[in-house]
Length: 319
Image (cartoon, rainbow, N blue to C red; front, side, top):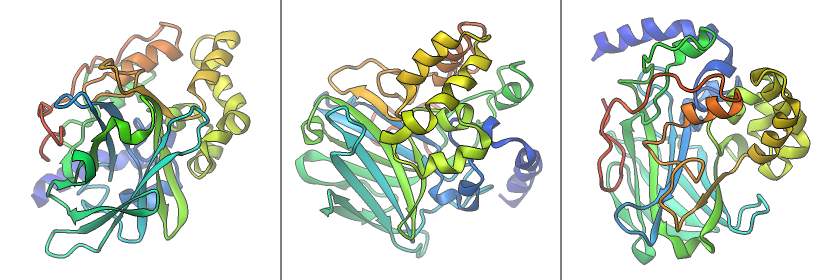
């Protein structure tokens, strides 16, 4: 194991020097989040449960390259907060907050509150059941994100090499009744806090990573989504225009769609990205095509390196 970790560290250390805007979906997306990978939100997912059409699955991953760059546990001094907007104003109406104990013998206890009230409790590595048939599982998993990072860094010269193959993340997986969220059409994002202070947040993939200027990435992560259009609308439109050959009109339209940074999903539909985000969705191809006006259609990585299980908790076992 130490030999494998040493080899991975040798391959990955050069990435520390690259601009954070070229890292991944949301892995290591700003200087501040690199201080504690346990609270760095890598990716989030939202989709109708394949096991029960009356349920919705919500997932957040943290700890980029868990066991190499980051630990494999959850922070005991932070909060992991799932926020759901059910009326389209980019303000949370339903809030699920997760807190974890310190690790003891490889296991952490966790507590889940819904809108401030007790909802569930359990241990990492075990599926916990909550009211209405809800299920929760927090553990180490294979990283479900797939992307040719090196090709992206090399001016879109993609070779189809999945940089994230073989890497792990920590993840919180929650499946709840759709009726608990107050509407079928919802917005979903995840925030983390460190000792009560805002630390990171994510909605759609790659918004902060690709579209927010380097000097504002930390600010973006601690800002409220509802304020995104006013705070970052011009920045996002400017960045998109540089990617699509100077088509400012289209860039302004896309900025208005992509902000606020909230992952929107119709939970009554089985469609994937841009309707929510399913684990197998090739979000990088979709976004590259969109942001470059079709000039770049894909990175050559079309699927995850591990097969996703059909049943809960839906993520593959760790490497």
